[in-house]
Amino acid sequence: MTVYESDLPGVGKKHEIDLPDGTQLVVVTHNEGRREVFLRPAPDGDSEKLFELSDDLARQVGTILEGAYFQPVKSQNIETLLGGDTLLEWVSVDEGSPIVGQTLGESDLRAATGASVIAIERGENVIPSPGAETEIQPGDTLIVVGTRENCEDFESRVTGA
Amino acid sequence: MAAGLFELGQVFAVLAVAGAIALRIGLSVIPLYVIGGMLAGPFVAGQFGLPHVPDSELLTILAEVGIVLLLFFLGLEFSLDRLLAARSRITRAGIIDVTINLPLGIVIGLALGWSVVEALLLGGIVYISSSAIITKTLIDLGWIANDEADPILGTLVFEDLFIAVYLAIVTSLVLGGGTADVNGLGRSLAVAFGFLGALLLVVQYGTTFFSRILDVSDPESFVLRILGIVIPIAGFALSIGVSEAVAAFFVGMGFSTSGHRERIERQLTSVRDVFAAVFFFWIGVGTDPRLLVGVAVPLVAAVVLTTPAKMLSGYLGGRVYDLSEHRAIRVGIGLVPRGEFSLVIAALAAGGSTPVMRETIPALAVGYVLVMSVLGTLLMQRSEAVDRAIGRVLPVGSDA
Image (cartoon, rainbow over the protein chains, first blue to last red):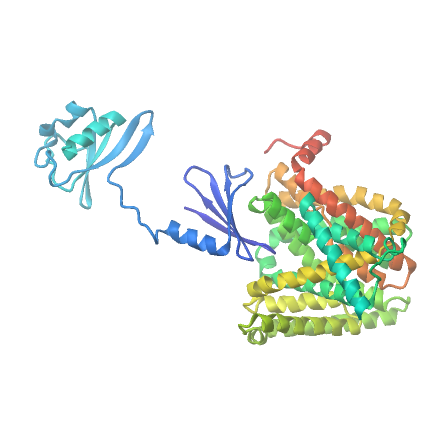
């Protein structure tokens, strides 16, 4: 993440934050405390004003964004859309999962769901392209690729639900 | 006493109404304050036998405080470090700006058959853009978050420094050089630079002193201590023939490094705005609308010549900042408004010795600021249409 800071003589300061989707967030902090927040759709585009906050309100909102009031739990299901309907999904294997102790071949998950395990995160290590003989242990995170339907099916079999 | 208080009451009532109208129609307050002063003054309200505000000594002194505080804030915001940090770009854009617009004004003055000093005054009036109007419009239009804000505000910083040096010299020329006496002129320039040099040294080495003086939590004492320093120093400067505005600018620079800059801005902005409003009103009170008719020809010439010149210099300045052509055109449009500093120069000219300085230049400056403040704001609000119109006339490129 890149944040650019520049002076606005007679006005205050400007911070520009690059967002992952190629847009930029622009925060203008006025000397008298007011904050104006803009979104710039493209680097050479015009900024559109989103909202304006007083000094007090900006600090309040800032602490909420920072997570001082509420920390979201780390999500159980992280997924990345690869394009089309294909997902990359991280599925955790709990102690009570029906597939614990089985090898990938025994679990027969690929034939049953259509989703394949492309890697296993085990503690600090990652097992890339695990073979059919790889045994699934509690605490593993299986990295799975497939359609959304495949992945949902896969996940429900792993949790045993 | 009673009459004086009533007159002052009229001043503030008219200013309040003018400010409300400006808010309603989305224009800068400056032209409306000036027009308010003109209407409430001796030349309009007085002519019709209505109760009017005379051009009294009280009003003049309050307006003078307005000039001092305007320049004090300029010094407060001015940072030599900032100018040096971005010096290549700010300086290049600023030099383009001054080498196009100042000589143009001087040439117009000479073409009108004026003396060199008179022409130099006109050069300053048409050169200096209005920080107040431009900054406010940048915020209103949201340009402040765009790339064009950097060259616009950078150019204003350069103009601020230039105007401090300019006022120091021109004040000596106008106040000390009324006679064609070279010795007298040399003496007044020496006094000016001696005093301002000494003040600059105090400012440079007095940071701890300024910090200690302002280290008080009571807001009332804080405001009074600042006014108690800046106004006496400016007044003393004027009493020895040195620009009070430049003295105030230097004191502002001194306070800017004291660590109290933001607090000063927070607590004194409204004080400055009140006195600045009285200054604009006073300018209006001293302006006879009939004189505006008399300067109509040079006024039209100045507007027609200096508007495209400023747009060109601003455009080139924007290109120095590597902006696209369309965005650089916006920089040019954004620097068109003229305002408070042109009027400060006009007020200085009014203290001069020739009829041109006393009457023609102030009237021309008032007419010029009325036109340019409104025209500049309108051009900024309709920048898309201006850009398209320029594209039709000139072969503007396709890199945006």
